[in-house]
Image 1 (spheres, rainbow, N blue to C red):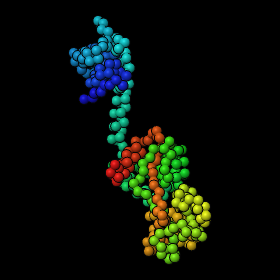
Image 2 (cartoon, helix red, strand yellow; image 1 turned 180 degrees about the vertical axis):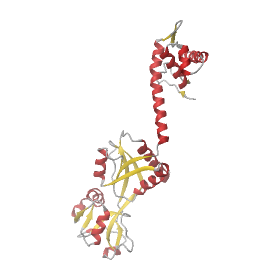
Image 3 (cartoon, rainbow, N blue to C red; image 1 turned 90 degrees about the vertical axis):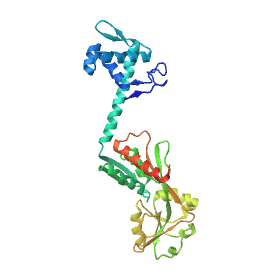
Image 4 (cartoon, rainbow, N blue to C red; image 1 turned 120 degrees about the vertical axis):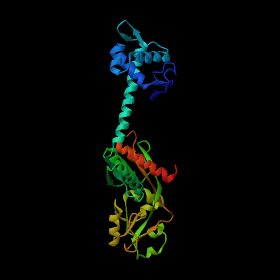
Length: 317
């Protein structure tokens, strides 16, 4: 049974609690009588008996404390109060029907497409885990990942080309809603595993002096500058990149050392490369962002809910 809970905030609750138990079904009865202008014709359309319909309207009038119809010998017309209720009832039923249709549509979703822009990070695993679980529920779901730095993926987000972006710097809270991923990425130096620096457990600023360094422009501008302050300008940045894999190839070919996150590059004994973290430790948080007041497709909204649940399970929040 559908009930409308009344309160003073409802425009159709003239005296605050008058419509606290009005049924959706009775509103449909009321509107049909108003449309037909005759109790008998309305009863036939609604497939209910006339006495039943008359009692429902009488109970409604008693509940509201107002007369809704002017009764004539062969017809009914609305009172001023009846016209007010008609307008409110139409609004209420439109919303009820729309909401019902939306929930039915959700039940019918089996797939759809979502576009996501991603900065490089091992924490993308949380998105992968959410998608893995999501595809079990919606087997026809397809995803499209675009890689880039924060500036590139947020530009695509602003242009409406992607649904979400995964970025590596705090979001602009005036423009975006966000989820903070549970872990942090650790910065360090990628080098050949036979390099003298590979004997060290950590890399300090002094170790970077005179090295040919490769790093993303964003990382150098924000993260490395946060780590060593104005001294960042003295580092020898010989090349920039967006994808760490490409940088690792350059390192293997003897073109320098790469500043990047841990776990992005294969650094086992067979790779010929190793990673050493910076000292003091430099960490970067990751965020999933989307535009404020963004209207998602149903499948995109469901995926966002899945991701929120995955992160909540991880953090216990």
